[in-house]
Image 1 (tube, one colour):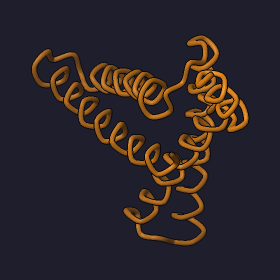
Image 2 (tube, rainbow, N blue to C red):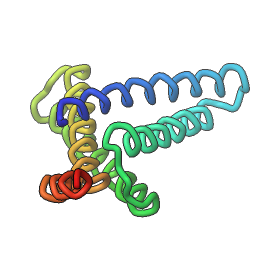
Image 3 (cartoon, rainbow, N blue to C red):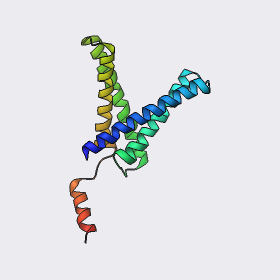
Image 4 (cartoon, one colour):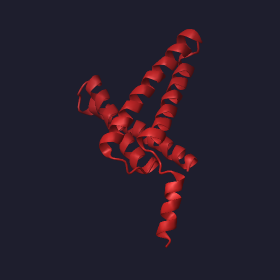
Length: 139
């Protein structure tokens, strides 16, 4: 189950990155909205797609939208702050090359969002509950 979730999470990440970037290019180049509006539009679309696909597909959650969306938003916010902290330390304390520092920061963000989503935002039913459900449905 965990490996399947990790694979789906990675695919969702690739998809929301591609779609977000495509929207940024479309809004800035075709619609001529300006770079900041294009960037905001792309990021909001990517974030929304990430929430929807991770909730429904990656973690198959039945949790309430209001609470799970708030949790996912907060998790992403905390993960982004940690991303910035890792980036700062990697660049200014450890003196890593910028690409390496950015890579570590991105991995930090992705890992924390996965963990937070799995444990808090889209929690999985406990094994005892699912086993009990399976026993009851087989009667």
